[in-house]
Length: 76
Image (cartoon, rainbow, N blue to C red):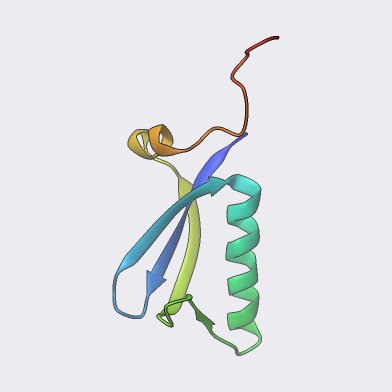
């Protein structure tokens, strides 16, 4: 499974990175872009406005912190 980082640019000028599966990252970014396109806005749960969203390849360090979704070749 390919992993990407969802990069959110916030109205405060900060950037938030969240590592997730590629399909989930693209879905989240597309939903935000759709909201902006129809004239809406996107706020995080803490009510900070998101002004941009993009998916990027994860760094090596980020890939080490990504959890596993199951057994890694372990057989019973």
